[in-house]
Length: 305
Image 1 (cartoon, rainbow, N blue to C red):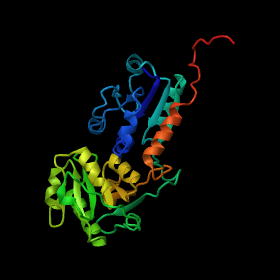
Image 2: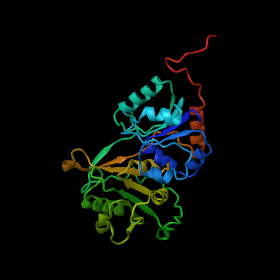
Image 3: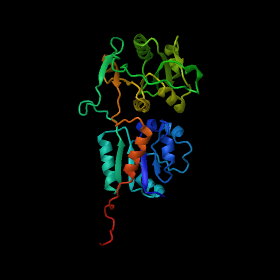
Image 4: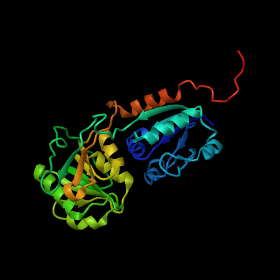
């Protein structure tokens, strides 16, 4: 087995793999070991990768190195796709390097506002003031046909992604206010709802709106997001996907002081060297990461001379 490994962290990896050509790119690398954290989206993304090794970490970036050693032959080179830029990630990569790995952090999403300046985070009291000027810049993604849902063919639409998770669930009046504000800015667009929260059929099921794919279908929802003019949602995976498809998007999250501010709309941008040929860029980055020379492992015996 190869001594190369690829680690996909939650959020960015599944969005990246939802793009056309990415799964085919990985299938063309049959000897690379695939290390996956637990995420339901991977059940869709990596269907058919029976030759790959799938390892679920205990939590976050922590997975059992002994399990990795036994099942993957202790890979020497590791490509990391991640949406985290935290100190925990830096510590984890340091641990990887201490074990003698050569590590490539291929794709990184910046969540820091003040230090990096990659995007500006603004807070709005949703019932009073929603500034969508940034999101609705002169930038529209061409619509695509969605064979799984004939109702959407030829429609100009935007997508709202909802979730039942307690940390991500917002009150119905929040979504109603958001739809109202969006409709005022772009009355020509139809709202389409994807996600796991059927309770929203009431407030969002009125004239002009469509509930797409309930129960939740990750693959179909990716196709819907890819054809949208605009995306607003509670899940980082879809925000990353929207970024990669160059679709204007905002994250819809509770502000820590939500009693005062109501909602946080975060213009979302990925810190990537985006090219037209994303699949080609992915291939080149992955190849560059996994073809670097491997230093001797610490403590390993070396031949004289």
